[in-house]
Image (cartoon, rainbow, N blue to C red; front, side, top):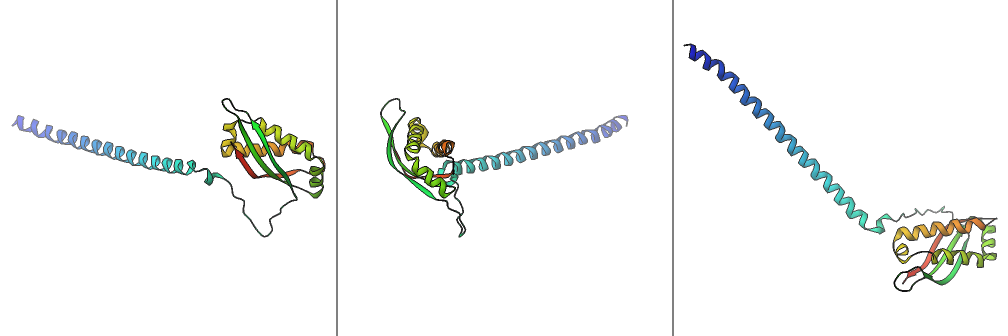
Length: 170
């Protein structure tokens, strides 16, 4: 009879151990499944973002046009050809651009200083490498540098924007 009491006393504790092991196993399994689903969703989002980021056309900001769009006076810089830095073969840029000015006085000043403006643009483009001018970011940087450089010597107006009307890198 003493043996039956021992077995009866051990049975519930053995059942409790099995129950605890089963609960822990279920919790671990749920954590693993949850982690797997989370990792899958994060990977899927990053893959979608990578697809979107590969298309440079989607990264170009498009200004909103409205009936009240304020367009300043514009000065056209005629087409020019510039040799650019290249290690292996000769490369050049054929480009023409338009400068949007903040005022009519600035437009007049740029027209008077056209040799100085063309010189600044030619020197800036000539200092670039073939690789820099191939991608969108390099062209954006060139626009910013042209704006900054021309604005340094203008007195009565400033360049608001630079627009490439023709740009060929070969």
